[in-house]
Length: 320
Ligand SMILES: [Zn+2]
Image 1 (tube, rainbow, N blue to C red):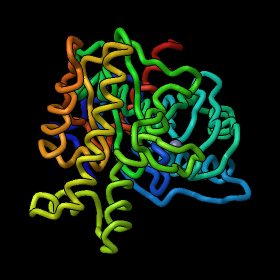
Image 2: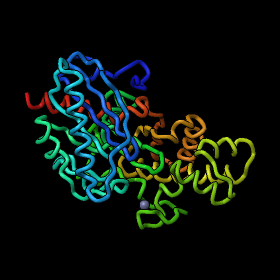
Image 3: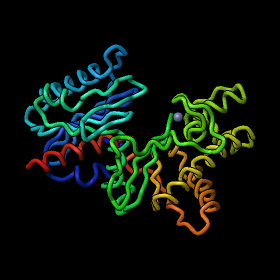
């Protein structure tokens, strides 16, 4: 399974540096790979993530530790100096703790210490979307940008925020724009009403279309195509999503002067069909303020894994 990145691994990974193991734990799948000291990638794999509602943190940590053992045995001559681990949810990357993840159920689980102790490796622990954002900024669509937001739009919506070239983490609480209110927003599984992701996510588009028409669809793309073919329900739902995203992006631009918005996740695959109407809607609302440049992710689905590897290399270099 090769990295799904045009032009191969990005700078920072492609060159010489510490050898690292990168692991990206997702709600469904866990991705892993070794990057050796020459910057070559080995053994990229995707396996189902461990779920155990009684001991969710332990189950994922054990799977990560087992992966580390397997890679060490499989690549005995590739020296691994550190492990980069990223997980979803709310993450305190300074403390090395997974605070909360709705799709797993852990509560303040000390991933960094547990995994580091069991493997004997230094562990760079972080948030999957923050890591994906870092990777985009250092080696992808955000290269050269200072004030940027990376929005991953899939089942839900999560963001990574950069101001003046620096990532804003706020102990894990920055970037949760999917759960900020937008006009016309609906009740959200998080308990609030009006969250951006109840209108603007791929999950919302699919769900709302089926609820309104009774017709099941495979995803937001099918709703987009139906809208383009003249289905009014489909175009209205798509337009609500664009309006909600435009609202949130305008708030960001007005508040922190965001100059670049990098869209990733499933919905961004719509490309110009999303970017063009979204750009127009933002322009209409910005008056004298600077409308951000919209672009799509360059690193795609591998951004989180690449970010985990970059963090692990940073950790080794900082200790040297
Ligand atoms: Zn919510």
